[in-house]
Length: 154
Image (cartoon, rainbow, N blue to C red; front, side, top):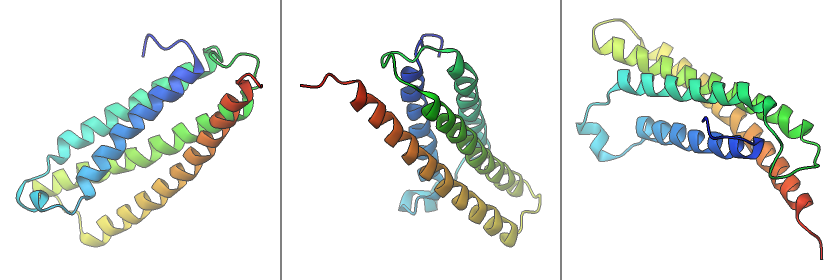
């Protein structure tokens, strides 16, 4: 993160972090055969999710202070606002997934986590996923538009 000097670099780095979060999501919710026979380390997954959320929070806090390079001269205010909303949504989404994992881990140790509560948590999580995906699509569109506007015209 220390070598990120522009807003565009932070956007790319945040996308890499999101890829890692999605991979964890897929690991948890996959229906593959190996998952049936192999225990899931929910405590480790919760810690990894929390660390990735912290990294996104760090990126979000540094973002406003960076240059708009490599797309100088463009008004980034719309992208800036959407990026902030996106980060907040991603953090909220995956913090809930970390909490679900922590509850599943504690359940394996004997603490109660009833199916109804789990199903409710997962339903909320899934709605949050849809929300951050919609914001992410808007952000991708804005960045794509900004990049195309900065390209030299023939």
